[in-house]
Length: 359
Ligand code: X2X
Image 1 (tube, rainbow, N blue to C red):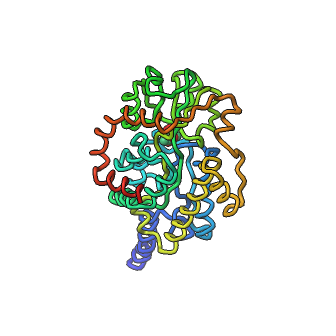
Image 2: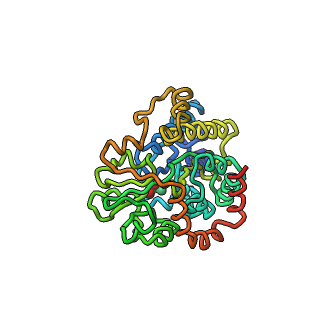
Image 3: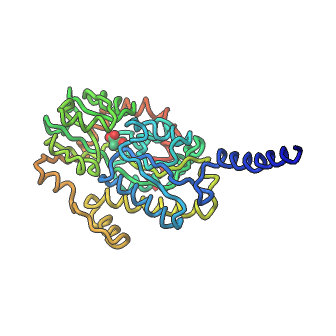
């Protein structure tokens, strides 16, 4: 009898630790890692941004010898479209990682609104100086404080405005135009100051709104205008470079800290490489021969659209390119936005940014 009881307990000694291990470590049979790491991406796989996400997943798989498998979830499908929740859910660990716009990160990291100060940055040269300078370091540190591990910069591009009513050349041309903007509050402020009628909408709803002509216009970079074939809905585009929209590859920090050093290195390298590729896709044909050459020489890749502006024109869009003076009049009209938003972004950060752009 006694022996039988002992035998019965022996199973428990084996089973309990086994069950505990399975509960505590949600890893695959292979060992330390999850079977799949979920990545949030706002747009679809055919956007340059989406292709950057796919490139990152591919490079991570290669560089970690198949140990880390990332699956991009396009169209904010993990968030039912609520793109502004990306950073919050990665910080919580509900989503493992993201390749996201600084606009969508700004709901958790107000410093990211720096890039949305209207007519503040204007050139690729300035943008690169900010990302590589003290400004970039301050923003990455702010992310680390909020349980997000930033890995590398990517790009959506300078945002340009399209509509189906008129050529936008002066602030007064925007008067009364119903413009779809992303749900981040600084965008409402900018377009109200310019006299437009901004409506915020998640990206997933925006496309339907263009199709149904619910809005007169919208603003997005060429990397978005081309895949959505914006010429089907709008016949006017103004290139005004009013604000920059960088992307960041980032990971849940707690999960990141638990990765072994070689895995961290491999993933970081993959993010830097994928970011360089994706940025070049977005800039190709917009920065002389620089990005086209990077794509060809470093990635053996030939762009399908050599000159995005010419391409949009060929599709029937009227192109307006603002002169420096015209840009200045828009900048003057949006000064109240600076007054309201600089304190939220941080006075010191804005100062650092100006310094980075001068150096
Ligand atoms: O919602 C947008 O306009 C988009 C796709 O550009 C962003 O995610 C910021």
